[in-house]
Length: 311
Image (cartoon, rainbow, N blue to C red; front, side, top):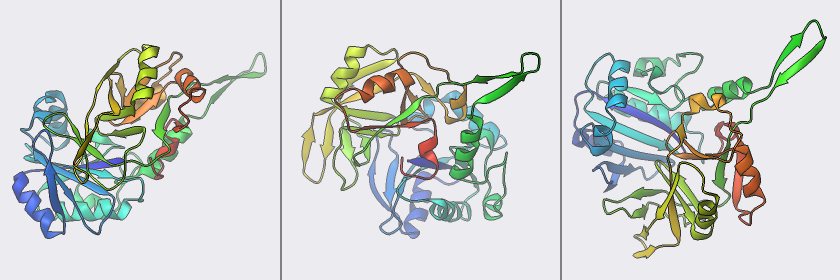
């Protein structure tokens, strides 16, 4: 799942929900912080949530809010829209279409996860396919190619000894599950609600959550990994009107940004969270997990799995 977001100046969340409804979106529920979840019946692969900047998520992030305000020239945004773009679609057309729906209606800016707050995109820039720092809007492919190139081994020649020294860093590995799974979000009572028709899987990850089956949770607990807390989890399946307690939640406190992944050098067993949603493990932990009984785990080096393919 990749993401874009929109910071609008002026409209209320209810105004924006009404605007999105005119473009075919339908509200489906509210999250823990009161954000409205919306889906489109025919534009598949977009998971939209809308809320104001006074909700509990933003009140707990004063430094990030200040960084956002600096990015948009000191303006005070009123409504925040977060959009998850499924890896099952390329998403280029969908992300730009949604930008037009919102930014033609209201003053505001778009952000993507590849540049973050380094650049606030205007609709004019998006329509003209302008580039910033070599990337255009939602340029997952360009970001992937850049990261791939920057992670290649560097070679330095010693003119006196006439030989090369190759410096290689061991990047972390994205850990995922070979089985598809439903999208979840956390209810006010702490349960995780299933949002779509897909079933549960042994490992399920999304924005700010990582749930694993009991056996894998016990395996992780036995490793005593630093920065990892394991707690009970309840999954609510509204269509079946039942609860499942077969998973536990991994609270991963060691985090990093996709923009800093090439700076990581992990020689010990570690589990980390990238951009608040993607679970990564160090090379030593990957090796251990590959020899474990949990054959449904899949690993990709660095950001190789983020070049527009399903993640």
